[in-house]
Length: 220
Image 1 (cartoon, rainbow, N blue to C red):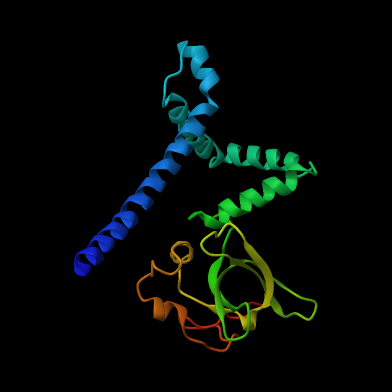
Image 2: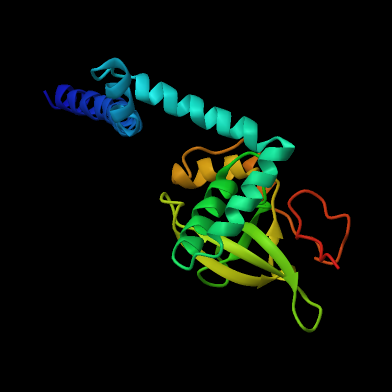
């Protein structure tokens, strides 16, 4: 009887692991679909005379795609710069727009300036290392290379901490941004291949030929 109860309990929790993530994914996708579909609901009602599920969502996705095509052209880039120059003059809108854009750029796989590389920094105390993202770099008054490092929380990587760290105290990794995000969101359960090789290893920061896993070279 005890063996049967243990097996039933194991099957129950296995079912939870299958059903809950799947159900949560479906609910989130449905919520996104419904919200996006409702954006153009008044226009759809005006054209068709009644609400047609899915039309608003499809048109919204198509418009986003068209906006991306236009923004990639020479004229589109000029339009984007002109539009952003206007937004940057508005005190309340400028910080919101800038933060949202930088977050999206950071988590995108494009060449846009977002997260430059994945590194390890000692946080929250010496001897412990946290997966972090370099967002920018600069030299201080003494000429020492410094990095602006974003340390995300896990599993909610949309929040975190910004730390300014000397380059010689930052350890580079061979992790891609996508692999690092998967690792953080999954609480370490989704491990990229060769994780030990990608996360370990130290060489002097001043070396310009640092091997994979070594410290970041100091750029002057």
